[in-house]
Length: 90
Image (cartoon, rainbow, N blue to C red):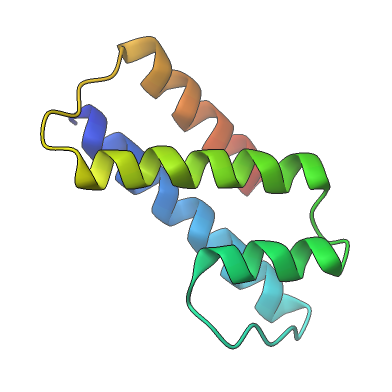
């Protein structure tokens, strides 16, 4: 799996976990934009400020991987990204 694929797949899992958390608490987000979901979950105190910051950072790297033609991060960065994403999904 390429670094880009790891980032994209990991982000999709985080995004899906956020949506599922909101649904499980009957929270209507009203948008598919991750920023709104993250902010609403933080407002409802379902995720911590630290987790929200981490999720925003993951989203930034996901966007970089999606929009940068020559995306070639260090393998250690990708391992760290995947680990952080997996931990947030638990």
